[in-house]
Length: 535
Image (tube, rainbow, N blue to C red; front, side):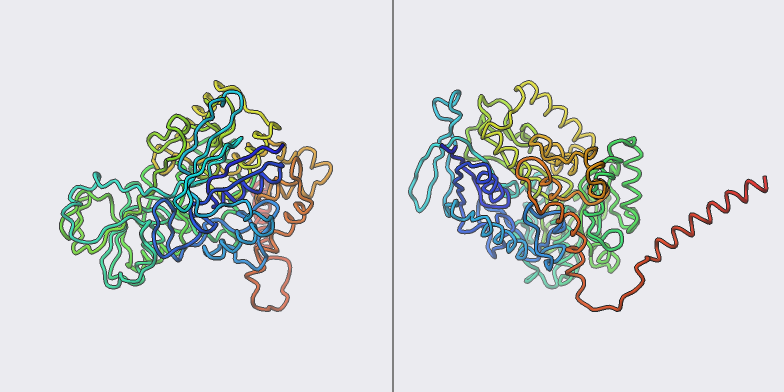
C-alpha cells in the first residue's frame, strides 16, 4: 500500500514535491490555504495575511534555463528573465503536464501537525485542517512542509528611534504593489536587498526624490554577463565552482571584488560593502547604477533617528521633508502548525540536517522543502531536495545517526558564517553548485565525470565548463530523463531564441574577440623571444 504524504503549500516547492511523490509511487495530498497555485509568484493587488506578497513589476533574478525543472524545460520563446505572470504560466503548464491539480485541496488551512501516539514505531502524523469553517483530521505517513519563508515581515522599529513621531507614511516592502500614488513624494527606502533596490528604482521614476539607506552596503550585479548571456549561466559552472573551492579564500574574495567592480566602481557610488570579503548575496538590478547617475536615487548610511518630517543618518547628514518610508528589511519565518519541539526557529535560524530534516526525530518522516537561499535558483534546489526526501520516505535512502547529523549542522553553520557572515538575511545562504551536487549524490543522480570522459567526452566537457543546469541531474540514477542530454546541448538555442526577433544577414562565424585574443597571445610570444635575443 502506498504511503500517504501531506504536502503543505502549493507554491513552487509544493508543486515539485507533489510530482516527486507521484514519481516515487507515494500518495500525496496537498493543502493550499488560497484558491490557486503559485505561492509567492502569484501577484495579487491586495496583501493577504499568511501569504507571501510581491509587487506587480517583479521579474526573476535567475534565468529560465537555470531555473526550470529538470525534465520540463521552459518554452524556447520565453524570455530569459521572466515577469512573475510568465513564471506563473510555466507553473500552470507544469501542473497540467504532470496532472498535479487533482492532488491539491484549495482554500484549506493546516492548523496543526502532531505526532501520532505510536510515532516511534509508525512515524505517522495527525494533520488537522480547516476548510469552509469545518475542521478535519487525517493521518499521514509523512509530511513535506512547503510553506516558504517570505511571509512574516521583519520590521525592526526599535532600531529606528523617533519612528513614533514621524508624521509621514511608513510600511514594509511587502505592502508595496506599484508606484501609483507616490508622484512628487520624497521617499526613504531602508534596505538594499533585491526588493529594496527594485522598489527604489521603480519609485524614482515618479517621485520627487528617493533615498536608499544601507547599513553595510552591497554588491550590485547586472543580469547581463559575458557576451550578453544571463549572469547565472556564466557564474554557475562546475569549473568556476571548483576554482572558488580550491583557491585560497583571500584570492577568491579578491577575484569576486574585481568581478563585482567590473561593471562600475562600488566605492564611487557609495555602495561598497562594509565587509567586502564576505560573500553576501549580491543585488541583481540593471537600473540602479543608472538611477544613481541621474540623481534620482541617493545612497545614505544607517538611519540614526527620525524626526517628524526628516531623517538623521549616522554620518551626521539630514534629509528633510520625507513623506514616505519603505522598510525593505526582509522577513522572519516560523512554523505555526507543527509542535514547538519539531522545528525550532531561533534568531531567524532553524536547525535542519542539510536544511531539510529535523535531526532529533525517531523517524525521518518530516521534511522542509525550499527553506534555503542558494546563490542561484531556488527551483532546481527544491526539486533535488524533494527527490531525495521522497526516496527517504520510501525507504530507498537513509539518514545517518542523530549525532552525525548534528555535527554536520554545526560544521555547515560555521562554514556559512565564514563565507556569508552573520547577517540575519544570510542564515539560509548556501553555495549553489556544491549543494546541488551534494543532494544529487544522495540519490545517485550526480554525473560521473571520469566515466563520461571516456564514454561521452563532449558531454563531460559541457557539464564541467558549461552552465550547471538541472538537466544534468537527469542523466543518471533514479528518474532518468531521455531528453536530458539533448536539453543540455540545446540550452544555448533556447537562451538566444527570444532575442532573435530581427532577421540579420549571415556574418562571419569566427568571432573578432577570439581573433584578438589569438593575436594578443602571438604578440606576447614574439615579445618573449625578442627579449631572449636581446639578453
